[in-house]
Image 1: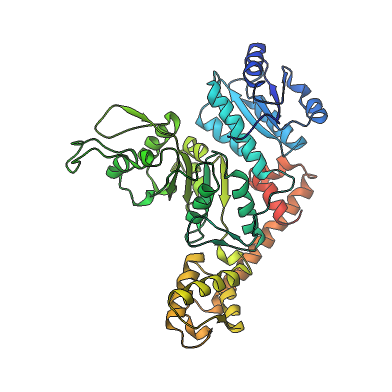
Image 2: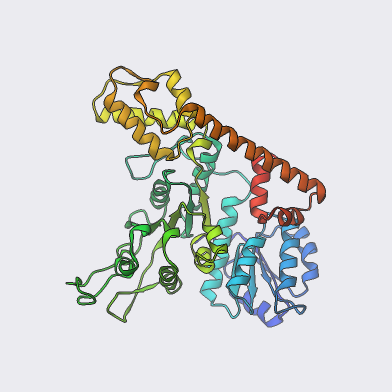
Length: 457
């Protein structure tokens, strides 16, 4: 968890008893805790105090059943200071309202009456997320081109997109915040997970990786949570599951987006209770793990389609790391190719030590649908079959021609240009009102800010 002792917190609720209870609990953990019963004073308080976090009641006296006034104040707060972390509290919460709150820009969501440890943990995690996406200088890695997990293969990249990934890893690794890594197949999600573990306070404890997409419905419980002897036909002895194996360390659940709704429900129960019950027993066993998950699936869309549980998503994505596809990483293609060339020429004892300029151009024109993994295998194959000291275009086989790859790149550029123009038009139409622009474009506030930053707006 992050240190809250330097943070300033504002609590806004129209129930005086709630304000008093929250302040008594939280004043030991925060540098400053202010309470306010009247939400109309929020703009004044924000304008005169550099708060890090606001704990905001969703249901004031007006329209309590829908939380409408809480959402209005959430919008107002983020218009005044989009960098503020806001955690909503309500006595009328459900999954649907939680989804709405997160889409509207809330950092998290808790229910009244709260559990003290849960409330504190939620606030701490919100501060972690704020730090990862907030302003101010970001600590640099010792080598800005390479971030090395305890794995023979480093994470290599000089592009701005990868530098942001490296910076986020450095900022959140030493916390226990749950991390969701998003990206296409072959972008290196497993390497990021290992890098997070190696920079965490759990680095000397186990790192257990599980391919969730490979687990059948019948095997999931046994594989993750263990089983007792005789629990089923092939259960010849007691066996600990992956969560118990990772106790004290990190568990990495890859392809989390591929599991079924019943599997999601079982996983959510474990994450909420922090215990596992082996198949064939009724004895819960406590587990202490840092959770990292990854998927190439459009997981936020799956929530909208009711194919992935919203409450599970908000358990696993305290921090999101988006890995860019290789086709968007510019000169990283050359840097990666050179790194793989050095590795495989040594491994296979080949004299090849260079990439021809013609090959570099062709590599940068190709779309790389398999991303870094495809590039790695292509370089390995070329090194094995090479006859000279430098790799040439003829040493490679591409799934599509460079001309076709160029078309893909041009299409991507055109789409980005169209998106930039749409945002500019909406900003002009609504006189820069971020709430109205985000609503018109169907984006969350954070997503809109990310795109504005991307296009230099």
